[in-house]
Image (cartoon, rainbow, N blue to C red; front, top):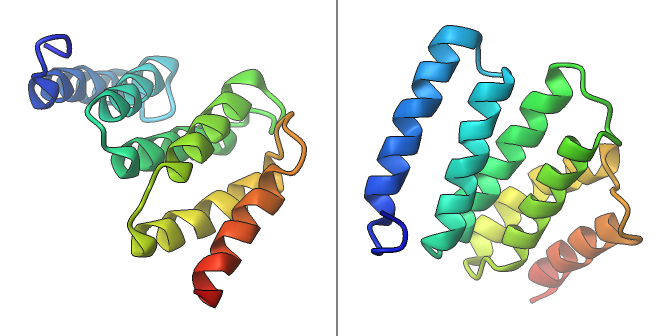
Length: 130
């Protein structure tokens, strides 16, 4: 469906799988998180960085809440992907909204890229100054 440009169809299918995984195993289960990650990537392919960023923030939050360490590769990857998608958002209101969530996560999950939290803070400050 994605290759044919039917992004909404692909997301609906992934959402059904995610819902089934949540019902069977819970929202923080690896199966449910896998489908949340698939949906985040589908949003990216559809050119929707807001939805993708939100999904990656959710994945990172669930992983942390379920006991994953902040330096666990799956947590760092989710935060890094959220950060990347956040950087592609053009709407200032969404940048602010998601940027504050991202800054909170970056404070807990700095990742391996030096200055990631500073990058978020600087962009948010630029929006306030502009």
